[in-house]
Image (tube, rainbow, N blue to C red; front, side, top):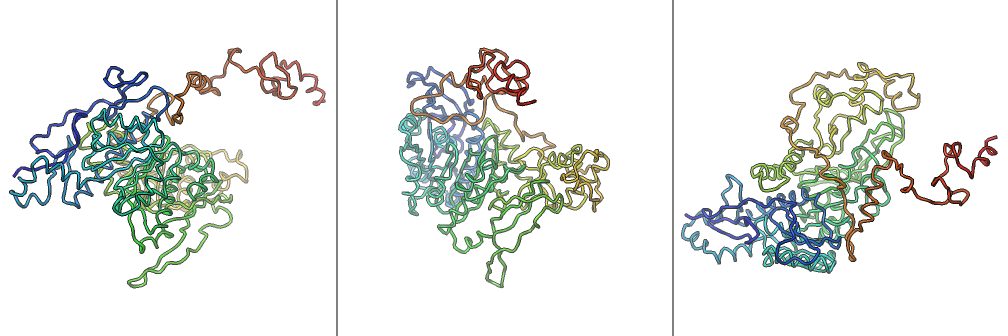
Length: 617
């Protein structure tokens, strides 16, 4: 019996199709990041950006947005959608194979039972028709150059159609050209419309998309309401947030207006940002009797990325209040407590829902007697589906040549599988020790002490020195007190009202054992996986917003480089200093001083020396 599979095309010359197993011989993928100016079809000022199997025509001017640092984001998305498609199509009787994978035979389930029917189904025209009818429909709402969508078409199997939408006319035209350049025009359609309107018009059950990917410049909040309606039953939402300053506590009022949650400055701000976006998604989905199931949520570099499954169910939506919680954060020692918004109780075959009781803390912190900040609401349930993450991890580690960032994906997902699922947020070991002004204990010793005390502990992918544990804050401070006894602090220098003095004044109720245990060192750390990558390149991070008139001027780039690190490297060349009037006397200072400080006045300010001494004496 000849088996048939749906595979990812090995290059840019053909689209995903169904071929016999013995004919599959995938070629090696093109190395990402290369640029060329000699390929046919290029317009003046254009280059070719290569990433994965895609070759994207890209203007040198900043007319269409592109950030090469987010290659990890795109690679991870391809891996997640591949596993999602594998699950969805398996329910329809189709399995899929990716070139390079081992021990994954992909066949039509019904074809294993009847050899005659299998031979008939192996005819090429019928396979292509079958692929079109049973594949997934994908929407990229903010596609820019279309790189992500082209990679979906070339690298993700089992897709029926891909809609790459962008509001910019230049971006939409570039998407169409890139689809043609990569020979995927038959599966990828360019669209120039408002992303929200595209999704609102697809709210019907037959028009919904199986996968919706939103990677906006900044906040995705304007598109979330339409997205939770336009995704199919059990469909996948892929959301990126790059407005981390808002979500990490710098602008709590702005975060509340966009996501319905108050962010606060804290050491666990990156995981809190993940829980804020999940809270916002679930709240908007609940309006339409839908709910979310987070599959994978990661905080990477300067952004966060969540993958959630959306389902419909009025009975499950009633649990929504008990899935969200308010956050009480001590401003002195950083201890935090969660207060669920609601509670549910089982009464035989029925569930009874009621308001939660609280608060879980007193007026002041029990450890340092400082006040509390109130944040949230945030998502208080698990932010990963470990079974699904393990499938993605197994596929990536079993096919390491598929992505250029495979090592980092493997490291991040390995840490995700090791995280405690039922413990929201985390403490940072450096912050615990700095609060009492003592030396920081080694991570393995501190983790071992928690394990000796009978508690669970794990690391977090969101922070290098994170301690995620089910131990209460009082246990952590007892461990710090025990550590301080062997590494004493000069208590005479501590203020009596400081958190350090109040915490160390109490005797520990728990005698800590810092002897290192074997299970204190996680496997991802033992294997030296790439968990926290160094900066990938100079001047990396969020790029400038694309402009219709063109790119960033060279003057602006030179200015950025000139003032980068200005506090560590002061300007010594007087020609680079600004010649502005003195802010007090409105005169041009011959010494190029912009703001007259006390030290400048006492040295040589020719305008204010007399006035200063008059005021002084």
